[in-house]
Length: 148
Image 1 (spheres, rainbow, N blue to C red):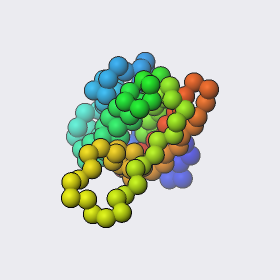
Image 2 (image 1 turned 90 degrees about the horizontal axis):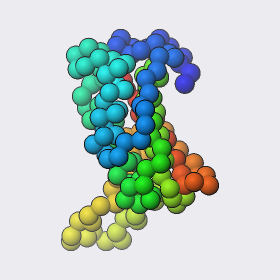
Image 3 (image 1 turned 135 degrees about the vertical axis):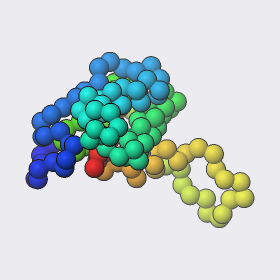
Image 4 (image 1 turned 90 degrees about the vertical axis):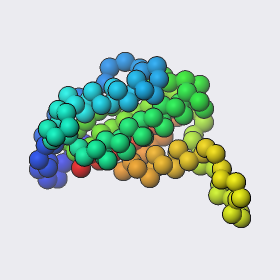
């Protein structure tokens, strides 16, 4: 990832990277793996780690992508979380080539709120960049989240 300026205090220099190993079985394991990556780069809270609200957003996107891979994609086939400078790239693969979609908004205000269907919209809103790549074994969703 190119860097046009020096990283902010507490951010590893460009090219510093930590990466997950293996495929987590659950969303909780995926969140723990992402936290481990963040801590290996930044240390614990108060040691230059991104603000708690940023970490919460990263963990929320992690949960959504992994849960959707299990629920809608035939299972998790690939998972990486990599920090490079001031961003985290999260890649989640599943066995379905079907691209995620957001359900259409109701034509009139609903008396009963819709349950579910908000996760993909939330991922797209919280991440700086989201790409979906389909391939013969399914798809991989890559989300880049800023850590500053």
